[in-house]
Length: 165
Picture 1 (tube, rainbow, N blue to C red):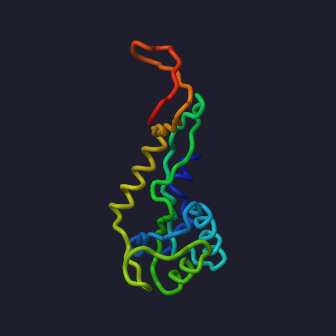
Picture 2: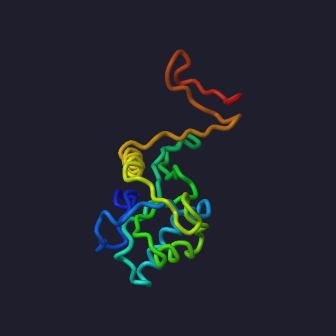
Picture 3: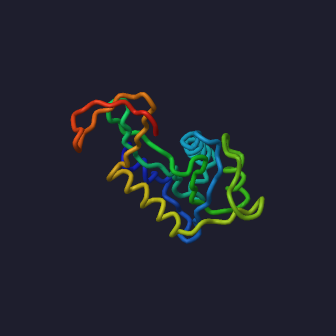
């Protein structure tokens, strides 16, 4: 995953004043966050509403998995089912997002007027994403009965079987 994907490239350079664009949390079908991001970008392009939208973020981080003794880097969403959208809220933009496939609605506020989240909250999420890129977290999944090699301590280089977790 490239760094530009993690920080999310803007749909288009916003022509609206930066202060007019606010961050909103969109609830999506779980596991479909990337599809929602792609669908939103396509709909924004087709509707020629680039001036009303900024960045679209799917909060993810990289984790290192150890499976059968092999390391692999995978992507983990830390807010599954949620996408962050920077936009100018009006009836037209609300309708575009709300009626995008795989979107169930906005989070917070009234039914037809969601409340934005603060810039500080967004920056906290972006920083967490950057940390995941710079230093992937280990994601260790063992199963009972799996054969493991002890690396340190008095039993170094011994093989053992996981009895319980």
